[in-house]
Length: 473
Image (spheres, rainbow, N blue to C red):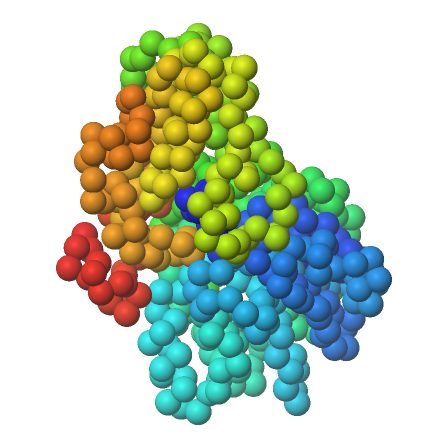
């Protein structure tokens, strides 16, 4: 399917706003800016102070929400979600926000990340009488909150969060307030902003630019924000925090115009390209990046080496969802539908092709072949991150080691497999230095698990693929 054109996909993006008369419309535009984080489903739930109502569907934000449908969601509070399916599988019932009604109150949930102990918690809850309506790990939190008694919502949420393990940025909305929580390792990005007298939260700061909000600060690991008519209050649900933001947010996932913990994503990627150039010595005629996430790194590489940067690959932005699950014949042509070489740029040239990562190797092989078919004399593949050798359990769709080509092949074997004339990966040390994240307690402040196998949380056996249990570091 078309997802093979890019090797990695993240689970989702979240956006919320409280205290704005056009909450649904603000959330719609916020989700539009986060569309790159998930294209399989989207939803919005609003609060008018008396009840919660929502709309959701499978597809892109613009396909699901017409202007009329947005107007049918009046309220001053809203949360929204865009989804890429990993945990729980697809289907309408798993599209978020999840909305639950009861005799006492209602609850809406939106989640970015993956709960690594969701399976065991689900078994426990079902044994105690819970009946789940979805296969999403997100629903576990709703059941834990409801079983927390009749105390203040923030206390019930805190107790529920204390039972979770893994990566999560949660938005929890009732009729009267919006609660925002980030896991103790801060694995997923989450920021707080303000638009007039209203407050908003988003997976990426680029959403604030779209809706005209002012960035206030990043949500801290283990922090719970309570947003209501009295403003914003910060409390802790965990003091045992250890910042470990996903490194791939800087390398690939986030939009270049977003800032994560004070670091602009475009600038970080450009520095990755510069550092990559410093770590290798190659003669070439032209540098090109694989659109879109690798262009910044390619520009940095070209500036450092003095080799001209050219647009050697063009991305077709009008393929549309018709081809997300094409026939087998079209699946084989997936890269050609999405990317095209510029013959006038690469023909007769020694080409440096900069990309952000190699996951399964199929995409790199096809792009190298396309460039050579367009007349490139040599294709030197330069990757602005280290080899991905370990599965991710925190919401990225690489859950088994066997699907990662660098886990089963040497760099030379991989070079031959993709047909490149040379293959260079950035070092782990070079990547850390280039991103420049502030160190936390002597640690780089980033999750490096997919590169090094050093996971920031305990990995439970029921999270792992059977083939990986014996190889977990």
